[in-house]
Length: 318
Image 1 (tube, one colour):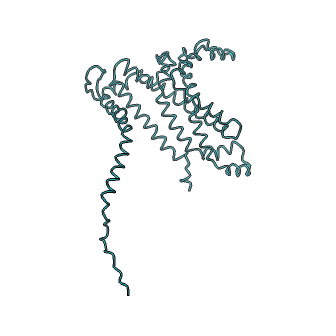
Image 2: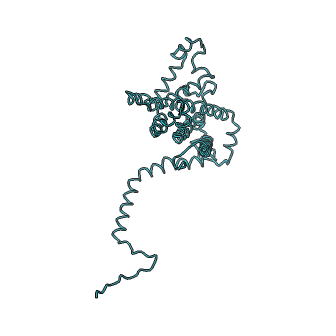
Image 3: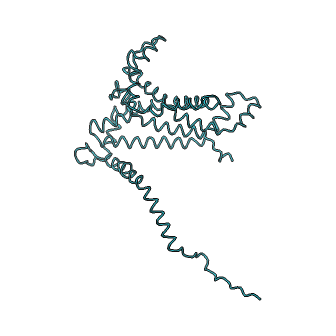
């Protein structure tokens, strides 16, 4: 007969205390993690969160950068909504967003569809099409674009060949906004790469089955390609819309820092810059900035709400 010593029964719900050495090891790991994160945390607090909180306070004050701010409540917002130039900036920005964003995405998707097919030199083509996205936001490109669309420049001479004599787009209030749109479309490389990644994930078996059923290229694109890449399309629409609302550098440089002529390129951020740094009305500019934040947040919310009707996810299909 063998005697077996039973283990002591522990009360339910209680666990043995972790060794002190283990707790100290976890503390050291956590401390090391926070230490590596400290540059990012400091940068976020000092360069992002701090200025945002300060600008929110300045939005309700009269502040000219040289004297202490004085609380004025909602006066900045009331004056802003009644300002004709502010209304003009909203009009110009909405026109830019509505025209530039769809055209840019259409071109990006079209080129991505071409590059998705197997052909020689794909890597070279991808790099060439992506290159403008890397340099398009530079000031030097803005000067080049201004030179291209000036009077008697290459664009002016080319359109005269086709019988269009409208002069340079830069000095024409009716056409200069389209020069900015063309610059935005030229930088289609980033959304193109994202579209290309989405197209690579579409199963080829779907195309083969549709082709057997007699579906043509247009039908396959509408019934297979678009639904399968709809999450990528949603991401690009969201990202490019936000970028379009924030356009500044191209409008400021191409218009020779005037945001004109006749306020034709007075995009929202350009007017914000003028009020804040040229007229030293930082309180008014802060109110404009937070109005833009709210507007972009509303557009983002609408896009997220609408995705339920046209964005198809594999998890939902399952």
